[in-house]
Length: 223
Image (cartoon, rainbow, N blue to C red; front, side, top):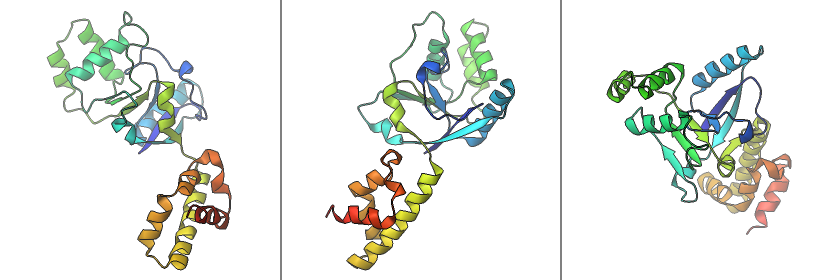
């Protein structure tokens, strides 16, 4: 899934120590799947720092939600459990961190929602009134990466790298079809299931910078 982070500067390195306390889902690095939502936030942050807003794009590996090695929490709507969790993280009497989840996903408590949450926490409105107020709100979305362990599940998109990977993959598939006399679908399966492809798509290895012929030779050595 493509996700976005809005700020007044481009994010090259994620440092959780720089993340603010007492946020919706606790201290962490926040992204959303909605580009428009991110652009609004980035523009706001930019104005506050007298500069232009910047949107940084990432790939999020959703498989983390079915990986038992990670502790995750997901809310699909403004519901009672979500409200309790937000209140826990915003409560100054709660410890920091207030929970031990690696990743939390759910709706956003923006300024409007946060104001109503504070009123609910003070007992000025009931829980039922709060949930009813936001039951028909426009969908919002956020994912919070709360621990160092969770950060590898978020990969910054390198557009140059992606372009080179796509070009190399196309050429390699063409060559596989010719040399092995197989269909294009089987050629893609052969490539995508290889260790070479895992290395190719890992930007940190630098393999994507080699020619497709060099990458193909590495692939052939797997057989």
